[in-house]
Length: 444
Ligand code: SAJ
Image 1 (tube, rainbow, N blue to C red):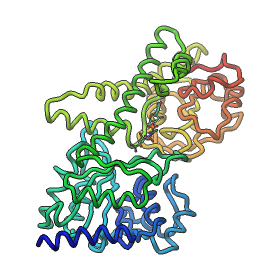
Image 2 (image 1 turned 180 degrees about the horizontal axis):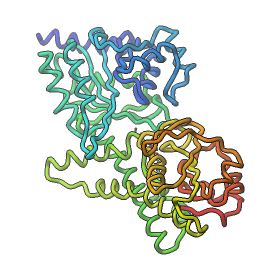
Image 3 (image 1 turned 180 degrees about the vertical axis):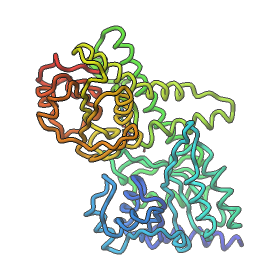
Image 4 (image 1 turned 90 degrees about the vertical axis):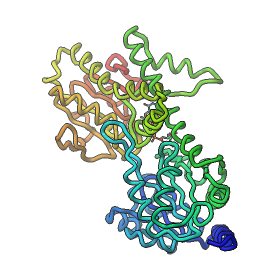
């Protein structure tokens, strides 16, 4: 491509981003992609969402939201305005100016990165790539994915060159599902690219709808920023989980210790123990970095240790539950246990990688008769069985020998639960400050 053409395609792309005539294509309409697509549509961009799941694509076009952080009303507004539609057809790539990839980056069974979604989507894009397009990867991944995995695929199948013919950047998603205060618009966003043109046009795109955009020197740096953020949480959660394990040994109340430690007005940040670490990020993303580091013969020991401690927590909950049942003179195989909460964290309808499910699984493996209640999740698969959420009635609470609080949904009246229960094992510390019969409660 002639230099003048290159300049034209860059200038043209920047201009249509600024005047909002740019056609935006969001690939993957999940908990990251759908809020992002709605934000861009609200800002006046014409947005096409490419979603591999036809049912989801249809629900978007019917303005029937399946993502907690996107209301059907705001989806309705975006669809009715004609600014947003969903499709399963990758041919829509051909008419896009900006393509944003928000597909899953899970782990394989032995904790190694699974980039199959990213690679598949990148190949589909590469086969339809046009000069003058910007591609931005938002999926959380190890440093090097954008430059070492995506770029070769894009250049090989299209014959185009990054930085002159097309533009490539990484801007890690920063979504805290359920967070009412920080949304796509007001969450600072990091953007990195490995050539100046790509960085400039990517910054221009994100600055159209996000208040504060933070440039970094490369796509690799942007990838590492995000994996560090999640590793920071995984390691600190593991630290307080390890403290809980120690406090159990030395008969101290870890919640009292942490509450007191958090009165320090500087140099500390509150983290609390729990039944384990769930969600699509914290238990997963740090292992992307651990895997990449091994390529340069480097052991990220904090990540490995944090993962090991966090994965141990459901078994610690089981041992505490059995200790309570033993004090009641009830053998596990004779016990009825009601677990409150199935999701990975409170006030969300998401049970992927949920530690609450792990807790139920290990209890059922020891022949406990188990029921659960979760206002967000009507039915779950546990240990090969389908369980249906029971009503949280006084009878259902009272007939359980033990109630285990695994997720602390705000809609539950925990004072009443303690009053009606025979015994409570609270893995979230939600009852610790309640005015209720604390002799019936065991904290993690
Ligand atoms: N957890 C604890 N103790 C804590 C905090 C969390 O046991 O002190 C557990 C939670 O119950 C949950 C898991 O860890 O099972 C993850 O919790 P999380 O609060 O990190 O929630 P996520 O994974 O939904 O969202 C996180 C974001 N959270 C926050 O910054 C508060 C953020 O790290 C990322 O933007 C997001 O993952 C992501 O998409 O990477």
